[in-house]
Image 1 (cartoon, rainbow, N blue to C red):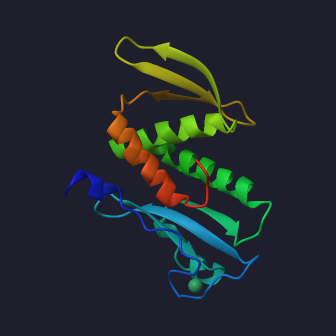
Image 2 (spheres, rainbow, N blue to C red):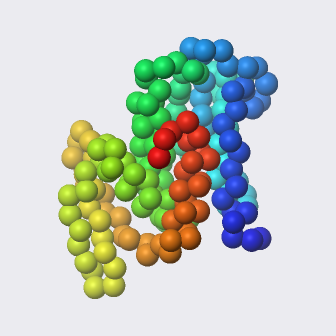
Length: 165
Ligand SMILES: [Zn+2]
């Protein structure tokens, strides 16, 4: 498989991927991310009733309101944070790299605080603090090439197509 194919993601749709029902303004729907067997991250949007019977196969999900001005920015930021948290227990390279990029993004948005940069001899370790609990997370700089950073940025854009980045 070619490298760029690994990051193709489905764009968010304004209807439920299971029953096809369209979302009207103000409707609550659930967006969820899972890793497919081929290692791709995939986002799907569900209406609430379909979500109730599907949720266990996804590792990260959040709730949004369709086309509802105002809260949307905060919801997207929560979604970023929830994905970041969900990646926390994963050690595979793709998850570690995505987590690094998400952490930098979240610190630009002031959801996380970058409080320290250490060096363990081989690489830099970034220390991030959580928004409320002050919980520290250490993330090693994965040494991404510019090309790889661009790929990961595209991945995030595809997962969160409404967010300005
Ligand atoms: Zn549905």
